[in-house]
Image (cartoon, rainbow, N blue to C red; front, side, top):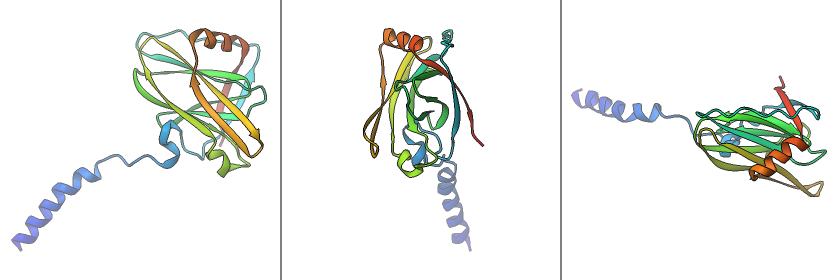
Length: 174
């Protein structure tokens, strides 16, 4: 009887820390992306080119899609979607200092399984008060062969892309 109680106590001591751990990320949220079931409605405005003021405690990230008739590209940060672009457009968001995974993924209701595999990710080491510019480029070799690249761009190029791109606004689809 005493051995059974002792065994139960030892088992509980080792099991509790395992149960308290966060679950591992799902396959769709690795690399910074959000859940694959999320979709956005995106509107763009070619007449607006807003910029955000920098905050000394946060970093600012601009994300550009640099293809005129491009698909809707979702943008994720650390496993959650933060917005989307469509066509030659951009949006921005702020982040806390530190390492962050940023992901982009082609949103498609028609080609759901294919679109999950069309994306790119990068890691940024954000510093408070700094501005980061990322460009999503979609390369089409054929309708069945698309490649996406998410790459940092120089600040001067980022400023140019703000002036040359439409501003994206988005809302989650239900």
